[in-house]
Length: 141
Image (spheres, rainbow, N blue to C red):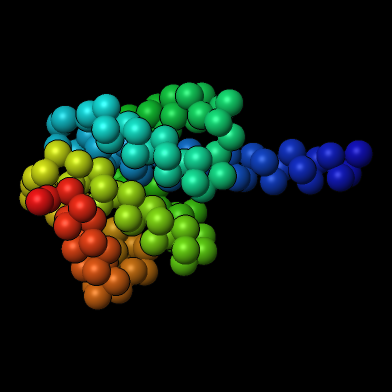
């Protein structure tokens, strides 16, 4: 019985983490007032890469949409993310840049968001710049 509770609690923690990751990605997609199909696909792929269950993906994204809509600051999204592995943080940052560059343009709100996230997630400027350039080359030709 105790083992079942531990599994259930672990699943809830993982789900909460994924909801916050998804909310952050959704926030980035919406910040330019143009949430596209391509951005949605990037979010879905990222969540699957981070371990989201495909069968519950739509529910997870709906929860994240609600969470993002009812949150008033990005700190709500980053509290748990900053404690994740460096590999997952970099995967999230890469996905954020993919979302931003998916429409071939970066506006001042998107740039500001990424600067703030670098500090909140403890990503150094060089690493952030390297990821940005890598993604930019892929999307801007």
